[in-house]
Each structure stands twice: as C-alpha cells, then as structure tokens.
Image (tube, rainbow, N blue to C red; front, side, top):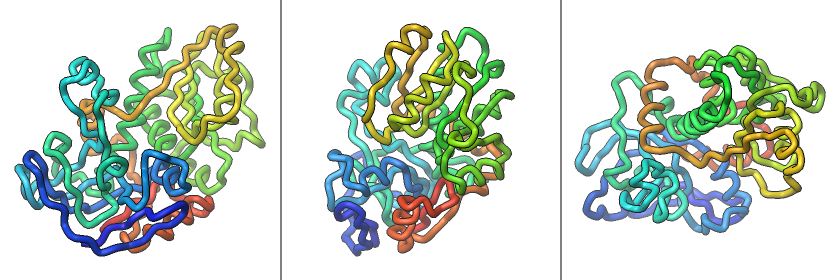
Length: 328
C-alpha cells in the first residue's frame, strides 16, 4: 500500500510499504478520509520529540473496516489507545490514561491507504455521514470536550456569556460553530490570517483581525485559546473579565511569561483541555450527522499524493482551508 511518511523536518515522502499483520483484537481499516492536524504540522517542523521520523503521521480519519470484527462497516476511530484499567480510565477520563498510546505518534498513523486499529477504538458511522465529514470527528470532539469543561466553570449559562475564540483554524472554527449551535449570541473569533478570517466569515461567524481591531480588556466572560502561543495567552488573560474563565486548547509553543498576577487579581479560572473521551467522540459523531454545524464546505480535500504540498502550503499560510482532508 501507499503511505505518506514524515522523514525529517519539513520533509514528507510517499512510499510503498507492506501491509502490517493484525494482532488479536485489531482491525484493518481502509482509509477514506484523513485530516491534517496542527499537531501533525508541529511534528513536520521537527518540534515534537514524541514523533520520531521516519513515521506515518495522521490520526483524524474515517474509513471502512476491511479485516476484523466489524468488516464491511464504516467507522471513525479514537486515535487514543487506552489501557482501560488505570485510575483515569475507570473514572471516565480516558483521555488522561496513564498508559495511552496514539495513532500517528507511537503507532503508524492514518496518512496511508489503510491503518491497523484496535477494535476498542472503532466507532460505527450512521448512514448519510460522509467520510470527509466523519474525519472531522477528532478535532470537533476536541472542541466539544473543551466547551463542556469551560461551561461547567461559569457562574451563568454559556449561552449568556460574551465569548472570544482565538484562532480560526480547524479547532477554533469548530469551537465557534459549536458555540453558535449552543445559542451563544455574543461570539467573536480572532485570527491574524486573512484567508482563515474569510473562511470563518463564509461560515457565518463574526471574526476580527486583533492587530487592527483589538479586543477590549476585561470584556468577555469566556476565552478559548485555540492557538496556544505566548501572544495569544497574553491576549486571553487581558480580555477575560474578572471572575471569567480561560480555556487553553492550543499547543503552538510554551514560550513567554504567563501573567499569574492578573489571573490572581482578576480571580480567573484557567483550564486546559486535552483531546476527548470516548463519550465525546460518540456525541460528536451524532452532532456531525445531524448537520447542526452547517454544510462544512470550508473543508478542502486532496489525494494522498498531494499531502506533501498541502503541508507546505499550510506552513506558509497559503491555504484558506481551515482543514485539509486527504483522501487516499
């Protein structure tokens, strides 16, 4: 089969490889659609020591089981492979599993014509949900998990809050669409990339360039930082009202100081959200299948042989697509 390998910093190579054998409790899934994630781009730059080249990246996918217990079924997958018996798994916080591994990190990923997946990770798809839409399950579940965590921290219902989403990439855009679906009326996205702003506007969201239209200090009850950079962390703390909540989702860098003095004086609630639980993924499949997030026409598809070029364009900021999905 063909697979797209990360071979070194800013190097991708399409290779022909043999099919890996199946172990007990595993299935082989023919990949029909697989998205490029920000963490894949982080690895592409050579900034993720957990992803060691040469390896097959990719963990956002949908496909059809061609060998295994669910043969013939259309599925998406939980890329987190959990143990099921540690304290976190038993408490329903499987995303924090002490023994977790992950597709596209410790295991071969989904940028390939097929991928081997533990049966426990497979989620059947409802009829009518396209593979490209289903490939958004993973990033959309990340947004859902973060929204649910932040909503529990607010003194008033989320729909009544003024909300700022920093970053209009896939997770930021999906966060905005989910917040709108939940009835948030005073919602603003902020992004410095004009192509991404245009995409968010086409999706019907209010979006600004924070360099030209700075967000007023102490003006929103909730902030979702979907970038995770020094500048966006500063912006998040400055714009959150006293008593408000700040959700840190992005992992672009770990640079710069974090203004804990302002966090203390403003009595902010600062939260992090890492990935999703199996329940989040299943709820997200239902949400996508319902059409509640709109037409999803901001997704761009390309063949697997166009993957290397897609990475280069995303890094250069030359793509208007909030999400590029490869279709092997």
